[in-house]
Image 1 (cartoon, rainbow, N blue to C red):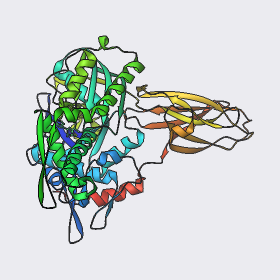
Image 2: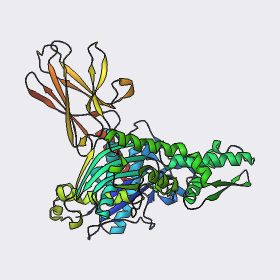
Image 3: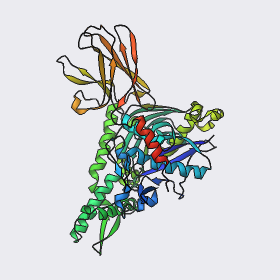
Image 4: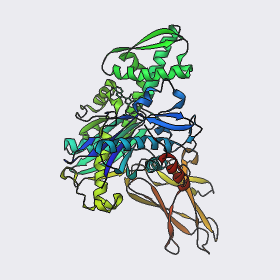
Length: 517
Ligand code: AMP
């Protein structure tokens, strides 16, 4: 049998891990000997053919060749309109670009382990909705991976942390990565990991801190006569790279300099940690608000929380540690490597998936035995988004009725009932919404399905609409005719935001044919 791995597909960096024979997960180094791989793709074209380069080398080209670089593609997952057009004239979706990154991780892992990779658990931010989860799964399939499961990042982090610490209690995971922020509350009891609640902001991460630092530095450069560096694409790409490096330096030193050459003249801007912290205070405050909202929503206070775990590279900034210590009155847990925790937990989950469903990776693996250290682990998660259905109110106006609330345990099943609106209604159009606001202007319709009804139902006949969320938070819809007490069937959603099977097949052929360096 080949191996299964865990993959943290990050906004800025990705990592892969595997469960070792001792039952402990370990990071798989990439072909360059690094523990993380920048999630950056450089579309080099030779003779009109794309030969993408993924990782550190691609990242270094961000400044010199910004037109051919794709970074932060995770922010575009689930957006059906996003495209990157390469200079060879090929158009790529967000799933396809992510697939190139996954293909590189798979390729490097196969090289490091000397074995084929059969399958993977890929992690996603907890508040990723159905469309983004499906897009992530599609990216894996396009890359030639058997996606055993998509797993929430904080849950994955907690899995690796819980195994490490072996402690029971309630843990708060504060995860500030390159592009996203997540906060998750969970209970660890022996081998049971139960998520209590989760919240986050998909547009808040290290990237935004880089932006603020770029603004500080470019203002300084402008004062020195360098003009508006940010308005020049090449210069601002160079500045972004230098500011990210400077930001990392400021996690260790109080002051650092950024050097830029503009119009052949050298410039130097000095930034202090204090100025950086002041410029980014509203970003940090936003994470604080999200933490407080989650505590309010779940009814937890700090005295009931036993551990605080920091995950994600951006938690290396001293102000994050200070904020969390100040808020919680606790010292954040040590021993968790913020860059690696998510991939490590995903590797544990991948091994568990194989143990419980050996057929997922071929019959030979039926004899797979889980190492004792992770045997018996159970993980239960919660929904990150409310799901509703469009209904008619008494005045005949459309509104959103919540079927599954936010932070409901998964897998879960909830129902709502409503009446038919005319005599002998022939179909019902089930429109599935995401969001908890009754006003349709504030929710998104994620998919719909026209369902035939039996003949002769009088107006007002009750129909029950049931939503089932599976382990991966994919939605299944079932409609019951309550008059005849029978199911009208279970239906897959026709999703607005995701690739069709046809698109997916075409993408598989397209991406598999591409060589990656
Ligand atoms: P992740 O997606 O969890 O790998 O987080 C990557 C993010 O962490 C990027 O925005 C990095 O700039 C940031 N990061 C990594 N190391 C540091 C550091 N020492 N200080 C500040 N930010 C860092």
